[in-house]
Length: 234
Length: 293
Ligand SMILES: Nc1ncnc2c1ncn2[C@@H]1O[C@H](COP(=O)(O)OP(=O)(O)O)[C@@H](O)[C@H]1O
Ligand SMILES: [Mg+2]
Image (cartoon, rainbow over all chains, first blue to last red):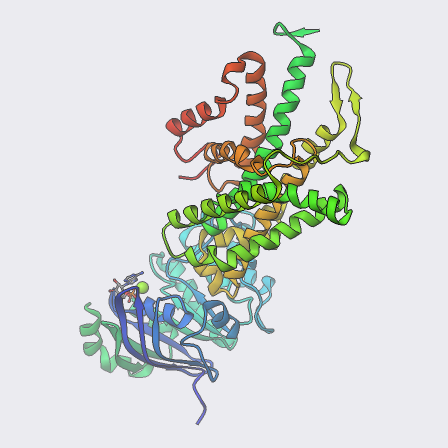
């Protein structure tokens, strides 16, 4: 049996005194697109941040390509080949679009070239010299995704890329995620937009109250609807 | 020749003095702004580090025979390294705490450094000669311009411009600007932000030491030279807007000139005019002229 690319076991995390993850178990195989579903406050963002080393104290295990990362500093985690696109997008106001795009350093060979990224997101090319935060919400999201494709990282953590965007932009983001899968990226995708998740993912984890409460393969989704609606409160 | 009823040589003489003071205000407030932007620490040791620059120049000359030009390069490196050590050993421990702790620590360090130098060298001041290449004066027709003073204004301006270019136009500068906005995310991209903070502190301190070497031939080299200047520099930083690079440079030169002109037109106010400006600016724009609130 092949080892999963990322294997998270019993992950706990704190922000200061507040204990937000209570033993999260997930694994992702090379080349998969896996979502984390769950209502607001379930702990999806915290899970990505904990993997990235951005919460306070962490316990449990985060194995990535065999390396244990649960105690590692976030810059060293990034250098192992994990790239993070935060929920708030994290576009820098004092950098223009090109500077934002070129900011994350290359950590391994095999990343996409700037031209390829511009082909994927033509809007970004037109706005190359605008300050990053002058872009529309959709363009900022494309920039936030685009800038982590250059680095050579093979595992992408995307936090609600469809959030707050118009349906046609959500569609474009969906196309992008499928294109990334085709190019061999592995993606852990946080979503609340169930329909969107369905169109891009291989498997889904459902979180609630800081733990994983369910796990569904994409082709079994139809049969699991009732159960999921309960968790997601829709 | 008279201008506004003031003899031209007097007017231009004071303007030049104002520009020279402004050059030091600009260099020092620039370093403070860079450090504050990145570390969120108001570096109250800055005046002492300026003074150290002048003293290291003096020591290089009198103990090792290394003259002004060597000192201009070596003193900032030496003092910058002491800054890096301070940051690693002490200042870095305080980033997670309130601003106030960094302020108290750096203020205390400044007093200790000044005290050590006073113990060792007394407070009367040591002479440092203008390098031979920069002695003399140019006759500008309406006044005599000492070559060294012209040099200080030009070199300070070039240094400010170079720092600005590095921050605004280079890759390293883009890391610095991004880390000023969101250090955690920049680190999560794989950049060693703690090391960047250390180097930024070292660079800001080196800039203060560079100003100290420039000052050595103008003011006598003495342990108080930094603390006299730094109070005004903090007013400059407050007026320009904490953390604004361009703002601190423009405000530095501008306030030097205003101070010079005040000496001509209303000398009684010349030592307080900057603080009056500060009070007015704070009332109208609490974030400073160039600051983002
Ligand atoms: N910086 C923080 N400090 C303290 N508590 C936090 C912080 N961020 C999130 N939380 C708490 O952690 C829990 C999980 O939040 P989060 O991971 O953002 O959920 P989700 O992304 O699923 O909406 C929530 O109860 C939230 O209030
Ligand atoms: Mg979230």
